[in-house]
Structures are given as C-alpha cells and as structure tokens.
Length: 430
Image 1 (cartoon, one colour):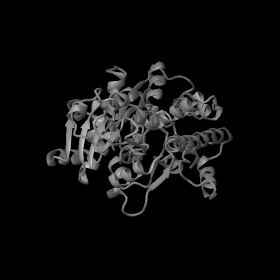
Image 2: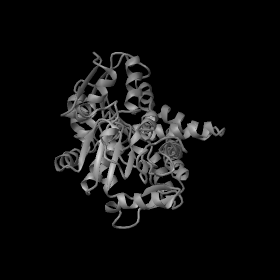
Image 3: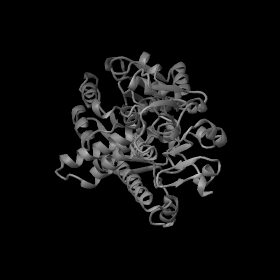
Image 4: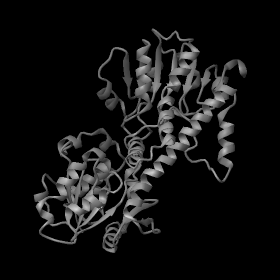
C-alpha cells in the first residue's frame, strides 16, 4: 500500500520503519518542529533498539522516502497520523491539502493521542469519499520496535467496514500469531486508551499511598505488596511503590483524560488525587533525606543514580529527578548524577550548573565524596552494586532506594543504612 505518514514522534518513526520493512511504500512527512536533519541527532531515536537500523535500511531500499510537503506525495491509500497532542493543527492542515480532493478511498489512521472524537472531525475534513480508523498509540518506549512488530493488542476504532479492512491488511504482517485487534467504535477506542493509563496510574498512586502508611506504622510494604498481589482479583502488575512516574505519553494521557472529563462536565476528584499523589511522591526521597539529616542539608553532596523517567530511554519528560533536583538545590545541596543515557537531556533541561556534575560511564564516580546515594531510575546496571565499595565511598552510609529494588537486610548487613519506599533497615538491626 501507499502510505503517507505525518509526524516526528517515536510512534511516527516506528511506524515508518515497520511499514516500509514489510513492503509498503511509505512517504514520511515530518512535522516542522523536527525536520530530518534535527531528528537524526535525537538521542531518543538513536538509542531506541533496532529502530534506526531499520529506518536506514528502508531508506536505502526505497520503501521509505522522506518528503517535505504533501504535494510531493503520491495519491495515498492510507494517511497515518502520529502527532503529539499539541500538533492537532498540523493534522488539520494536512487533511485539507488538495491531494485528497482529486481521489477517493483513502483511509485515515489516527495513531495520535488527540481528544476523544477528534478522529471523526479529521475524517470530516477529508470528505465522505474517504474512511477513518482510530488506532491509539500503545508503544512502549525502550522497546518500540518490538511493541509495533509483535504487539500484544491493538485498539482498532472503526465506524465502517472499509476502514477496518484496510487497517487489517496494512498491519497483516504483524498479526500472524493470533488476532491482536480489539475492534470497537472509534470514540470508544480513543477513550479506552486514556482509561487504561488512568487505571494503571491509579494502581501506582494507591500503592504509593499504602507505602506511606507502611512507613508511618513501621511495616515493610513488601509484605503488603505480595499479599495484595497474591489476591487473584488484584494481581501484581503496576503494584510497585516508588518515587513517582513520568514520561511523555503516560503523563500527558492522564492530563488528556482529565481534560476530557472536565470538558464533559464530569470533573474527577479521583484522577486529580492520582496526579497529586504522584507529584508528591516525586519528593519522597528528598523528605527521607531531610529527616535523616534533621534538615541540615546545606553543603551536603548527594549522588543520584538515574535520571531517565524509566530504564531504556534517554527522555526525562516529567521525570521524578527534575522535582528532586529542584528540592535539593533549594537547600544548597551539590549533586553528582550518573545515568547511562539521559544526561544530555538533563543538561539540556537544567543547563550548566556549579552544583551538578554528571557521569555516563562509571556510576561509582558519582559516589566519590558523596554523603548519600539516591536510586531514582532502576537501570539494570544498578541492581547489583558493590555494597562494600559503596560503604567506603558514602560518608553517611545512606542509600535511598526510590524503586525498592534492593534487599534492605542485605544492604544493612554490608554496613549501610537503607531507606526505601515503605521499607528501611539499619546496620544495628543485623
């Protein structure tokens, strides 16, 4: 099929590479905010496993072509939109282009997270001679290629048979093992995507509230988590307390869902609480540090492991580290931070500072001369550190585990003080 794809998001790059890989003729119209020379330099694109290799192969084979204007495209069978929520005007401008007036039968596939009902409005701009499908973005950053080419499910929002037929044929190569499409009306698919992330965020925030209560009561929250997860009505997924979630898609989907509820006149106290709890949890490690040093933080040096909003990505959008850094700097704390991939994005966000030193190779360099260590992002390289080496490097021998990945008893047995989210241990205990 001939595909005109518009966008410069991760979802756009992944769809362009994957569709061209299986033989479709893809013409990729990048958004003006990120033209090709700029996109090529993006850390998030080059760090995404397998993606850049497939893009380069598709460009070399000719199944993928980058264009600069809609007029350069052949008459498309499919128009694939993969734009950010604030780029809705670009979608409208594309669909009002003259190329859609001169032929019929194109199918709009909206892979963007726009307001509920937006796919219908965009379809109306193209005209009734075309069809539309809502295919909400469900990619996982850090494994986008696998998410697209071996999906566990796709939400397929269709209001007519033609759109469904074309979408199924377009994605047939990725639907071989079993039928991964969940077909439903267009608006239902758009709302379902937002509702899923709202539910996941609610589980995380609820678990963080329980962790706070466990801290107060002197209970190890890990026992509570395992007891809750063993209940088949609950399960273990997204039941891990931590120092807050972030990310460009998860965070903005929650805000989009809140906007949808507000616009419908149904303000959600629950969703507001979920987002408030998450923002408060981003300060959890700081509050534990404050308590440990009884508020005397001026002049302290703190090591931080991890800046990315999750392992496997270079992004720091809405990441807990941003809130944490602001709190530390406000108290006159110097920070030595290690992250294997996200330090360029962090420095771009906060600029050069005398109270920040960053490292990308050896994480122990961040701990030299530090009073305490904060674990913020659970990169696999952090899971099994040399505890005795850390004990010799950290003057206060304090480890603040923002992801509960360490065993408190073992850490304490190595002579360190451990503080997690709803967990703690001191050397004197063991």
